[in-house]
Image 1 (cartoon, one colour):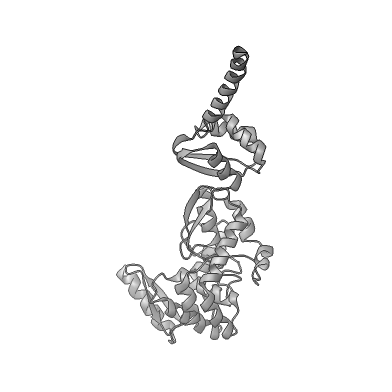
Image 2 (spheres, helix red, strand yellow):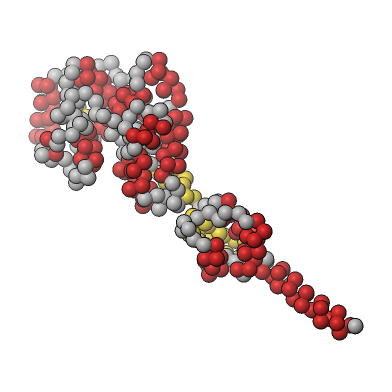
Length: 325
């Protein structure tokens, strides 16, 4: 009788011991695991075991058989002691590793696409597909063919393989939140959101000095009132970027490019904003300086602009800068 009890109890003890053992936590030192879309469950388990995240494949499979949750693709970070339950919860809930993404003021959608691609957040061609989509812009109530100008420059935290639409949604919502008070003033003045942001985007690209921004804004408004061509260099750069022709330096030939964004050829504002401006430029577009300047030129040594009221004054400034160089 004792022998029979022993024969029965020993296997049970061994099974229980094994189960306790495989569910014990393992120590992991800053390990990152990437699970691609469409990876079968058994392959996910193999990856976790090979990377030392699991003591045994069986523990994870038992949990999965009970919970039957969907396992999310993505990048996961593990550090310290982790149990199979914690590993399963992280992957089933999609608690991804987060990456810091800095979008500087004045970045255009092409710059943002490159940053996101480099960080592995999403492919640049996928981001541009949606960021330059009129359908996407309309879904946010924008009367513009792209999302350019409405993706607020800021520091963001995204996981790898984030869908571009989620990135766009996060950045647009941030724009709406950060510009709430300014937008109220825009509405009071009966100004369109698109015109306001387009002017702000040109200010942003022309100067990073806060004290110059209202002056640049004044030049833009003054020229528009006088029906003069704006002749803003960054609009030509944007025209070149759209056609994948930008080489990093403007030439005389570039200034002749027949493109609606080329404000040397076409009157009025460009069709859309040419970058994503910060609050300083957005504010300046609402509150331009009360001056009658019509021209400005950059002093490359000081990186500041010289402003003038007449073309003759402007020419004097240009010649003086040439002589100093």
